[in-house]
Image 1 (cartoon, rainbow, N blue to C red):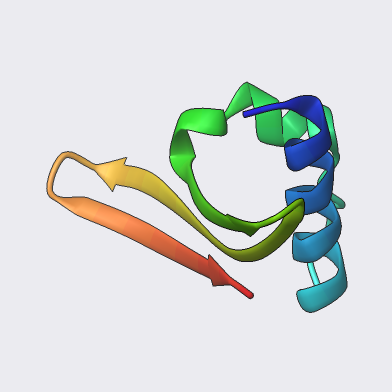
Image 2 (image 1 turned 60 degrees about the horizontal axis):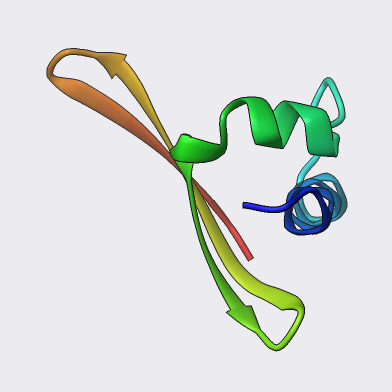
Length: 64
């Protein structure tokens, strides 16, 4: 994942969700293995963040 893509994902998350803290490219890059995303050209058209909560439980955060 490039810094440009990370910035686009952060913007997408911030615009589509009401979170208590904002995402930035550095935060996305720090956890880049948690993200699956789809690009059309240079546009992020879909993004999913997957976080392991416990060994048997995963949390899926779906952003569009």
